[in-house]
Image (tube, rainbow, N blue to C red; front, side):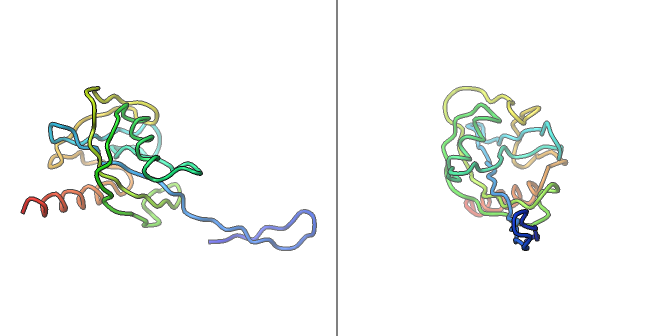
Length: 152
């Protein structure tokens, strides 16, 4: 989508391009077979996968490791990319495109909520909370479908 702006110097129309924001989300698996979810401190509220915006000059992988550490205090090992989710309505604030990683928590430190996370809990993937933010319900359904197909 582009918007027109007027150049303050010459008065000509200048096109301004508006692009989606790149983000990452991380499904963090723990040794006990549970996954980490955070309760968001800021709107949109609800339970969510840890994640956030990719900084300029940062790789998707680095952003995932950084966001996991900032929101959960966990060090993680990225296992694989689950997929990319780009529905323009997935974030009610603006258009985002997320790349979802599956990761394993590493080290012995217990997770704790930090940064944008108001609360953190470990959930059994088969018993998730009802109120999930963004499109995280769909993402987790895709994750569970993939996990079940690997065991079949």
